[in-house]
Image (cartoon, rainbow, N blue to C red; front, side, top):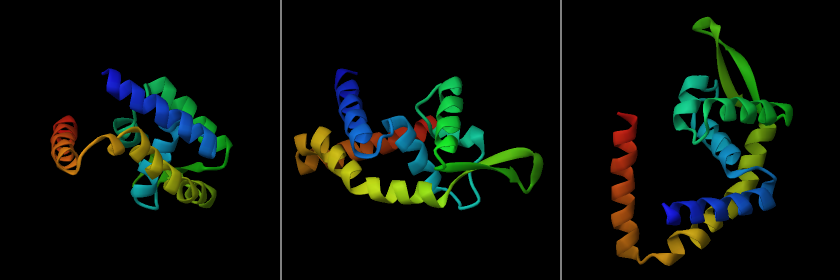
Length: 133
């Protein structure tokens, strides 16, 4: 737990310094960037998020106010919404990527040997898959 907090805090500081976004909001942009261009349902975004429901709502509101994401009507369900990256959001995410990956290395991967990285990658993939099940 202590290592997780140390990595998260370091990456959060780096994210805010590099692009003005807390790590959790950068992560939301990354999830949206990996999703379909049409957008992602809020429930699916919440499942991929580290935020509470109210925290997610506030983050989405802030990102929308900044013009980085937009809410769209769901074409298959007129009552539903989709959340999608705007062109500005894609640009911010693209610009932030190099520093984000350097931060991962600086706060995590640089402290591991190659065999440790292979082992931990497999372990984390299994844990993530179990969490999605």
